[in-house]
Image (cartoon, rainbow, N blue to C red; front, side, top):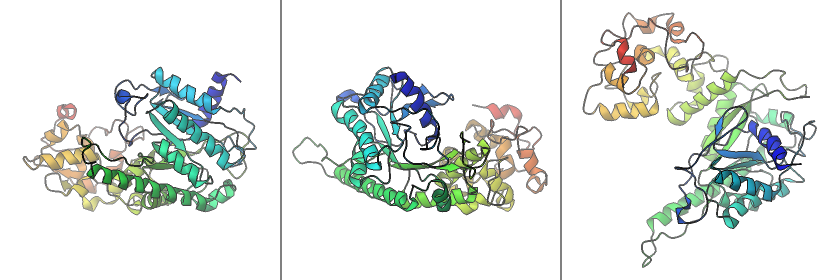
Length: 441
């Protein structure tokens, strides 16, 4: 098979894995030798077949697999065209694509061939050759196999910036039913092992940063390197009957137990010749989007999973509005809050105020009182925040928070609250705020 054909097959097969972000690693570049970098000028992006802009060469080593997970297009019983890269081919593709400024690094996963150990050994060989033979300093993300020898996982971490192990499904019973060859317990044991190694390496780096070698020009002592960008995981949403509440509770537990950098959500996509146990249609894509928004609230806005779910019904998030707005609409007694006096934690709960904006407000109000025009200059959408805040020149009029139709007023006509962040005309925001201020710089 021609290399181009393999790339078409194996890049397309990798699109179902969402956990390929390149953020959070250490800064490296090739100015002191080697090839590639993890950031900065000269890094361009490739475009996936579905139009997404990506900066990593994202491929599978092979889409052949001895496992028969019901939800996977590459399962053993699936009637798909198979292909396999050699280690040399993956290495040469990565280097060639980088030299052409197509990518900034590599995301490599694989189906299970022969055995978990054999497959993991091939994946590690790719990373080892890139790092040690070719001096590649770009970003490498390796999808690891929990059943593989811990020594192989340890070597993977020495070469990769980020490692990930997919938990696959939010419910252990569903994993057993849909992927009987996979062991949820073993997956978590492997994740715990990665966390321990990542923590050890971080502690050693911190210590090395404090201790400098005497009489050596102030150079830092060498410290072990292990997946400096941490580990992540992915859950498939909609392949089983798990509710959003189950998904978020599982996500929160994973963050707490393994200090994951990210939990990614991938909406289930119906596959050819699917088993009868799988749903015949995909969940609405907006469900995946709402879960990402809810995950953001857990990580950066101080919400707990139960608080986020309080904005929904029956264990499911509200699909019409974002989770923060859904929570606020059900907790109207907590509003309006004074942007000049409210604690940071409460400002983070105001619909329309992002985490960075809140930090700017808290810093600036030490020297001046905020007016609505000041919020407009911070690019805050005044129509969205208007019902939930007070300022020097603004108090919500006419019992706005008590109106039965407030939700209808806040839901955009197209049903997507995040579309431009604006509301239908007619919502009162205070006499001192005029429309021209909405676009103020």
